[in-house]
Image (tube, rainbow, N blue to C red; front, top):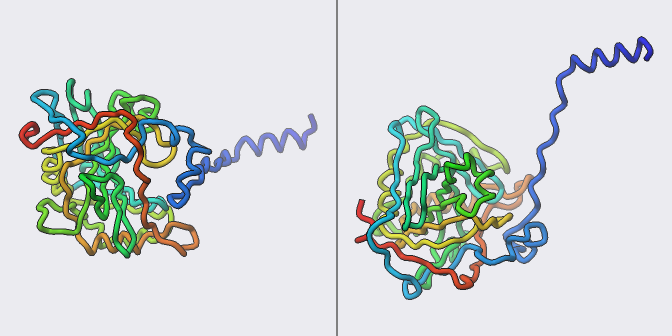
Amino acid sequence: MSLLSLLLLAVTALLPATAQPAASEPSWSYADQSSWSAQSPQCAQDRQSPVSLETSEVRDWGDGGRPQLSFAKDLKAGQLTASNTGRTLKVTLRDASDQPAVQLKGAQPGPVSGLYTMDHMHLHWNDPAGGRGSEHKMNGAFEQAEAHFVFFNQKYGSVSAALEHADGLAVLGLLLRPDAALGPTLPTLGLDGDLSQLSQLNSHFSRRADLRPLRGLLRAAMRGLFSYEGSLTTPPCSRVVTWLVSDRPVSVEATFLEQLRTSLSADAAGTETIQNNWRELQPLNGRTVVRYTDQDLQQ
């Protein structure tokens, strides 16, 4: 080897390694859901979500196995990270010590067994004309939006690892309606004043936030539930989700909902905003939907 070659090798060894570009996410669109299965075969298989939740099609639940929520001790000085993924508003919530803000624990014969840790919350909504915004349909009606609180089974350590297991995820769904008379209201945690920071695709920010308002909302949501075995509602449509959908709508501020419809760009050029980011209803295909009533889930 020549002296020049040796010098080049020596210089190269001193240079920092070149970062490799992250693998790009498979392309898919809410406007063309029939094509999802071409890249994600599970989207065409059974046990898919969302579904229609009908009281006439479910059975009541008796005593035992009730899922319980636990909350981090220091929620007042919590940490919030919000991002515009191009398909939704994703919000990660941690306490002041950077620990998960919420955990969910269940036991057989309940809908979930073991300890689940909240990974994030995200939202689905409609367009400015109104109409359907929720993914699930409840007792014959859609709502204008839906919030999903995504928990992963702690024994798998992360969401990505949990996607390989049938009991990997539990998702608490809240159907949202701009109606203060409903009672509990989805707390915006100050996001209503921050959405302008998320106008660009893939934009994000982190800040302190008082997360205590979540405690009352989520406990109220758990008093009555529909539960069934299903999937992610976006590709890869992994069939690993135990769904827990609150059996009554929750209020959402109309101004916050309007901001969601108009503030977040869905493309790099900023020509489109995220709207109607919901999946079509999927058949039950023999699955059982269990209803957990207020009387059974006193907390």
